[in-house]
View: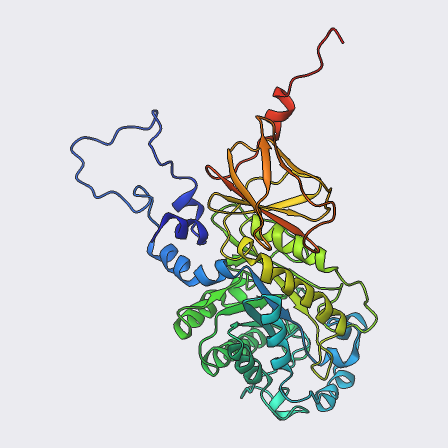
Length: 455
Ligand code: GLC
């Protein structure tokens, strides 16, 4: 295992960041007679648990970009996936949607094709959202796709479609349930809790037993129980017994393998994996009137921001009740996909990147290559201040044309550029440096000569 693998992995802070490579001078000396083997931490090698996590998460770190799919009975009402609670709809009024739910054949094929064309590498579909309706075949309830309107197992369709397109397969699963009779009273009634936890654990067992290899388990909302109440340790143990290669998130009240900042891009400290999940407009589930679509440029900038700080971007689509994807989503994702076909080198399998200061660009990095992503093209020249490395060469990532440059202690200027941005909606400069790219703006602020006093 290389050091790069280690850094890419979700290695714990103890294994990597807090153990100094050299003992500090103040550290007490090991007694000369000690025959003890050095511990894993002293050797700076990960524990068996960490090594296993690094192994399981490798593909995911390289992938960077995934598709979230929120689809349920709420999609028929077309007013957001929280409609049942936020409009106080009684179960008796909501339940009949299960019979009316008649999606077209294999809508997941369209989603998976869009995911691939967008440059996404994995998918995560809601198998059961808070509404409680199961898209999979289950022995626990009739409130599931095969026994209702669809008359078929929609999770199976999804899994097959995702695999056909080479996508890794993820399952979203909501612990909170607005339909199950014990879904709320489990908080105060011990018998109800037992029954409900059994119900939920059975779903997870079914999902991870009946569909072959599953790559991601994405728990959601743990209300109203805590980890002890959900028996989350036992839950995760079962998950890893059934799927030794799977990765799990942190929403069953245990840390799991990765954190899940929602609708924001917030990096975890190095050593802890994270994935920012985000809507394309302002709703996860289909909401007909929500036209607040992110632009392709915004999506690309978000993906860059995630990649820069070592995170993933899980971007949502909310198909309609029939399974079709809103045209505005398709339009935005198509443009993102075209951009990634030209610029994917700067995103997939990228490393954490320290440089970040610019008025018109953001950065990613792979090894000693710095990718400068210019979203507001200034024309003529593009400049980075405080780059501590020597630039060796530069080129446009799309097309590969060489770029000339000049560099002094304070700035690297890339010159002779076209007035109009050569790529759209973001132009990427690939800048080869003589070491790992690092930027120091305080150096620029302090050291750049001030005006002479005599002026
Ligand atoms: C929130 C919402 C839910 C959505 C999820 C995605 O927890 O309750 O509707 O599925 O975020 O991260």
